[in-house]
Image (cartoon, rainbow over all chains, first blue to last red; front, side, top):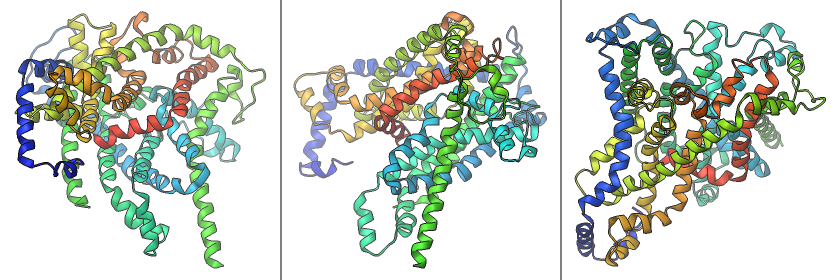
Length: 314
Length: 279
């Protein structure tokens, strides 16, 4: 797109000719095949083929040893008789909403004020982002310790500030565990959300700020009327990413609670993992996998449609 | 006068808020480092931080020995290096065709890559386990390397395509006139000029592969192929009461990433945001 200005100096038709000539020179099918085959093999063999295998196994009662076809039994069981499956889906939506309504507004707010902190700007960026650079398995295990009943940091702090009665079994109590999980997942992803907004803000040309100030705007007006509208494409992408991340959540839950206690923190991926690898219900787990893929495709499609309308042209 | 005071108050509140969030992000890590130097017995006090007396460096040697850190670290390095090398080459090749060659299959290729980007990794966990078991790939390096590459290809292709859309075709056109064929253009011209994007893809692939553990715990059983996350898992089972060493393992795994990030803040920031904005 950017070169179109330069290109318009050259006669358009002539360029078209050259491009077709060039294509003819290159259109050696064998070379194209050499370029695309490895990539295609990987995504067909390790992404699409497994999905088809899951689809196939989802019509069976495969238990790791032997299997028979049983039609749509797994799907009817899942959809009509499995409250835990729906609970997992609800948790995924909750988490996505928590990202969009709590994590992202805070991250964006922080990103907007960071450039005004002068000499603290760099250190602030580094400090806020560091948790995101560390492996999820380290931070998850760390939070298990922080929330631990025996020596956890949270219960210690509560004890120190005189709120000993607020101490909880943060991961062991079914009614609190899901909130702990949502908090930790938001904590882990916060730096990344913040970084995306910060990069977006930094990408806004500084002469816009000067122009706005000359026109008599204050910082608040500049940020709400110029920065926020300019950021809307970034916000759109981030909201889609956040909702999808809620759906795809696995690692944090897997390490912190494994979906327990009493399935109170079950998500789609952990549920499929425990059905398949703990209970050995491979056919049933495959059906969950298939629905998992369908949900992810649907949610991405729907989110893209919805948000495209909202944002409009800028 | 009133406005300056209220402005001052707003400023103080904003700064306090910023400081609070920053503290919430960093304090757990400080706590983790502090406790990695304490005796396991010290874990059950009421203090929030404690000066280690003496420093328990033994936790770190325990971590290395009982956590098998050296062996698992080597496996992590092998897997990550292979995944990065293959992902970069394969994605660059594929993205060049989609970005530059006018032929009818392009929209299907692009659509396929897009769909693969949306498919959740963990939906393939079970079928891949089934496939790997039947092809004897289970419990080998390949069981980790192959799916890690496959899942990095879509995002990498999009990053490379974003880069190619901003580079002029002039150099390639000149190269074709000079007699280079398609493969020559990709490997002699595009590869060298793509260095900055290759760096971005490398950072993204490194972070994703280095930190991956769900596939690892699903596909790997034998000690000889286990990757770094297993070091930590050792301390949740067998040596669960050795809290100090457990915290030391966490610090050992976290530290290299933190140091790398502090050294290459700008480059890593660019890599990570490139992925999301283009995706």
